[in-house]
Length: 161
Image (cartoon, rainbow, N blue to C red):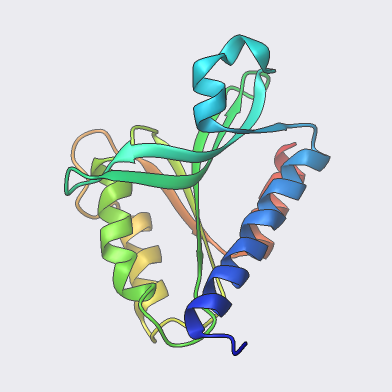
């Protein structure tokens, strides 16, 4: 069976997500589906990487983020988005939508967007980084939105934990 661009993108995105999961597992975090944790949070530790975390989008629809890092020990709650674009496609066209969801729809103050693959249009990643650094479209309470590569993310995790 021939692999389509969609199959390749999904597979590559899953590899990026698995890199995040395995990194936090090696740091002692418990990885749990958000909906399982939400039903019985007392069953789990206070050092968690929650998967498939819901939020209501700026369009009023149900959305999901790959991860929510919750750490009582480090006093952290960070939403983590993973975006992979290996070849020409539409992920970069979704950067403004992603950014506005981070600013206006995701409840966490700290958000990390991991972007990998190199297939986005010229200027798209820089736009996203500039928007995050400048706090574009943010109101009085500014969020801490970071746009990083996988290597930058892994470096942060190794330094932080």
